[in-house]
Image 1: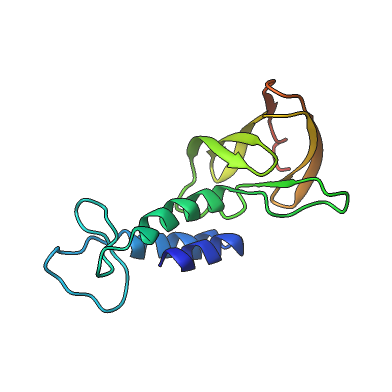
Image 2: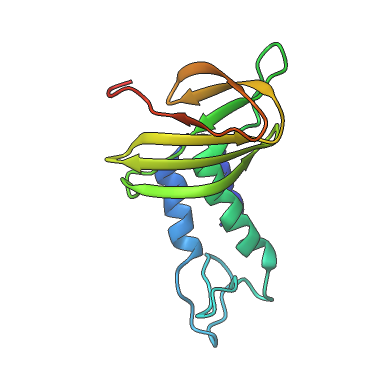
Length: 156
């Protein structure tokens, strides 16, 4: 389930990624033997017998991938920061801090009504990045240690 969650997140299909997360977090009785499907025990350990830590780590990686992706690069080699690339309809409002992007950038996001209302970027080094929000791109120059707040225009 964690692999599928990450796959749908990378494909920017938030609703399917959220569905996989639901399967992954389905509560399983400790005495139940499962040969397929997902689930967690009451302590939130992955229920695939025997206990599989990759389901736990994979779930958190998938959630992060739903909110931030930075694997794409510009032709010049700079990183593209895709903000909320796979935000599911089930998460119309959220606030998250501490996401890490390639290039040494820490990202915080705030969403309301399914739209990004604010992003905070803090870089470990000076650099130029491309920020992409639902296909709308803008270049930003970050200075080491100085936070940058991005507030998308309504409807943009």
